[in-house]
Image (tube, rainbow, N blue to C red; front, side, top):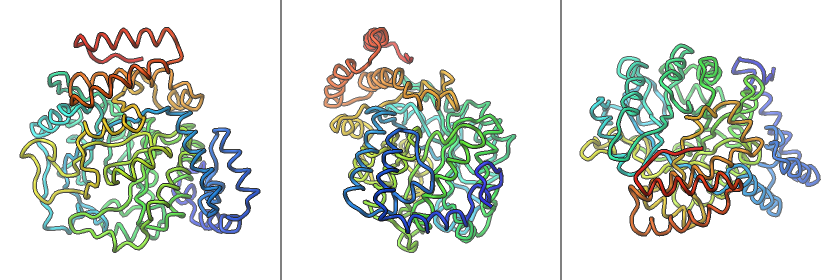
Length: 471
């Protein structure tokens, strides 16, 4: 029985509720009166339910799809302005005991090169990332209690935070590791992580168990209930995601929104982020084997509707996607992107990467400087800000500010100041020229005169080699 307040996976992600939702959506996909009313409701910036959203996803009327896209773009501006937060993944280890059939790290893959970074190698990776200009990392590791225990993850986080190279510093570490215990989530919280990220992969239980035939990840309920344990362990910023292409996208879309509704219903805080990866080619993985792939237009529509239905959430897209796809979905709702990513263990430091160790092929191969320059060319402010985490604006405190659209009073100047740091320390001449001009223009968009003046003063301080100002 469907119950969003339940702590049991099969009750807050109820299979029959999803089937009923899809049937309802099919019956109403041409009910333009209903669809128009849903778009009017969404324009009030309070979101939509999974059932309402599924009707919009099923709708094929081009004029109304355009309205969805226009609304998504406006909601994105209302909540996040024209800022795009930058981050990079850091793969610590690809040892894994699971049998996930879509991931080259699976236990039976005997020809992928297995590697686990030492603390010294992590230091080299972090210096390489700092020398690009990164301030925010998402650490990744396979599930292996012998090679990658929680103690290794905690030690690695401490190492990352400890490294200060020239003007470089990693100011926030987000963590994407396997579902674990409340006790281990408490340890991650004590290590001062940012967001705990865990992709569901698929919400379809039967498919989930087939795709994860062996290993601890086979346990659907334990995996699906991980965010509740993370919240119990004190982590109040969690990130959801599905791997589109494993199961029918309409089913996944409904399940993803139900999970967001569940977190709101139980904890009063929805997902801090939602990621939208699509399955990609990798070492022994052929994405064509999975027959539920989605085209670029459907992918764009999903992104737009997530923005409409969960307006407060940060939306993440990785370098799995091409420059062209990323440009389209940034406009429709994405607020965080990776840049210059490597999906192999040891991929950033010179000579650190083992051949044949990537988790997936990277589509966007540009340098961070090129990505930053491109974002500014198309009208966005690349932001390296981590202030909310460090000022305690997490969980319900962040959500309250975000839902009231007050977060921009600090995010906009913080974005400009962290961009200034990048320009001073890492940018090419062309990027610096574009960026300085953009900062001058965007200063006028800070509404509070006192904040604007203080931001100007800090920008001068940054030119004089002072760093790390924040509102």
